[in-house]
Image (tube, rainbow, N blue to C red; front, side, top):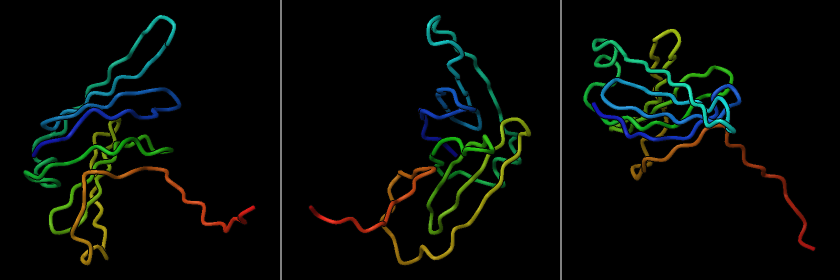
Length: 124
């Protein structure tokens, strides 16, 4: 299993950079922009937990879910799965997304907290 990495995230209202690879996450958070001080948090998932959830598939880092501060990952191999990794509790949840069988052309992009405004607007 491999991670595609290097994602800018909002971590508790601060700028963060999330890197990952081979069951290891590094979260760099900008503590002070003037002094360029960064904090580093390293998390390593236990091998059995990681292999049971993801196997040897590539996981893509999406970002950090607002409100829960969980790292969001996803993969598409015949089925779409979204993973939530809690760095503080060292837990991993997998969610299967149903109804995607008709769509076969997935790319490695997913966004968090996106809301579309479908309100009709008048042309002036």
